[in-house]
Length: 387
Image 1 (cartoon, helix red, strand yellow):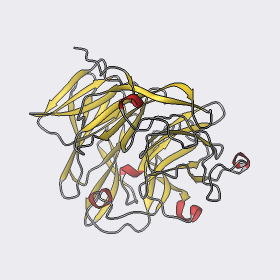
Image 2 (tube, one colour):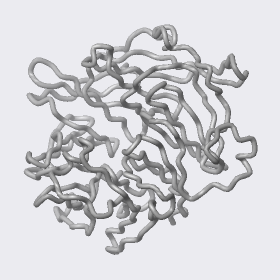
Image 3 (tube, one colour):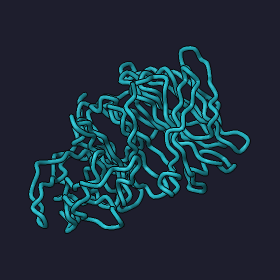
């Protein structure tokens, strides 16, 4: 049976604080010489690695154009959406709707829609809202074109959401009295279909391949972890990995290989599983899949942020909890040739420590973005195009 989301409405009409702010909407941010609104910022050279956002962000997406790559991101504290360019230091605010304390933002469709997740005032109930950038309006302070967020609320208390590789569908895990229910729908909550019902609630979900999702038990270095595939059409389950302490995963787009972590003897080890051959390769790096990204162009290549001298402890627990923080270098790993290449020493280049997570490529694979876990700021790195 097809189900629909809530009635359409403007976010700003629902929230008393959902109005445009007095902050300028199209000014250059860039943090050039510690100042905003620098008029000649477009003439300055763009460094190989740069800090894109000065504030905490809840999510971002990359959009390739004919001449550049656009980086859209949403501030965690305000819900304002900004757009930056990989080729210049300029930025502009493109939405004027204020939505405080967003925990997570997942971009869908063509980059003009997103799913916002935040806690209600009781600090327990999870709200999920499908938002779309509406028609441009003129901001009161500068007359620049900005847009309101319009959309629908999805079901309350969705625990986990994953977006399909095509960005046209979402998979949701919702708790019920017997465990949890998994559903697939359009991003706005319509055309919903039930996929499975399980007696367990604590799953993480990812969607690496259009036909297949991955479900993993919530990780801890003190508890064995398990990973399962879920067919997006039939709902069939299949165990891929299991009985591994500290198990977290990251699959490549073809689902031929999975990067996974294993915690033992106070250290974290990064391994790669060839699913078809059932062969495990051990990498020389002590890092987590959450700090890696697969190449879009070469299925046997991935990049990782690798910490210098990681401390001993129970992983990933101490990293999740913020008990430890890393200082990373960016490495490229080629499974076919067994070659490793240092891409960037972030500390040497920017003279500050970076604990990179949520690495992401644009489609051209010449621009790499990540969030610095230390302060949830957004960073970008210019790369040479892959062959």
